[in-house]
Length: 221
Image (cartoon, rainbow, N blue to C red):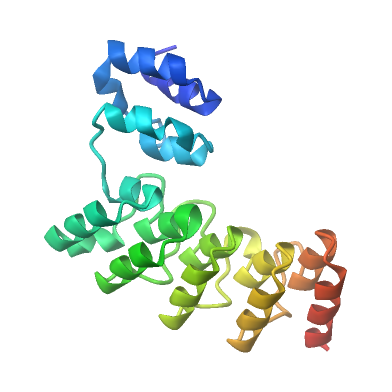
């Protein structure tokens, strides 16, 4: 196994002692990327090992706008955008924009607003098999303040991701009655179904939200 593979394995397993040792022996490792093009900082977010971020940051990694978006680093993100606003629309090597990362990982309306003001596409579709928009990402983690911001900027409430899932289905699965109501009020279609035929009502019922499932079935009548 290469040292770069070791790095991503150590991050995934949350081994802070071994991570410190690796970076002390090979400081340049902090800037290597996975075969999918993911940075060590993003990998810590993807694997839920954000407790390792102080160790990674102490090694002075070269951060890009996607790292900053995931971490919620507003000042440095704004500085990058001031120099190059087109970064707001740039895709990471694994297919997401900075707005996707903000919507999914931290839910910061300040970061999301800065990106939108710089020209980020509110309905940017991930360039990978997930095909999510930022609204899907925010709905998945119940970042409702960002959801409201995206909706205010005209986000498509009926956007379809992989397998045809919509933000309404995400909200229904989470049992988020308030968000379901808001999405419906903004034109979300409860009749839409996934590729295998499931509606938002089915998502709610499967997740044990019987009352919400009944409400959604009523909207389909």
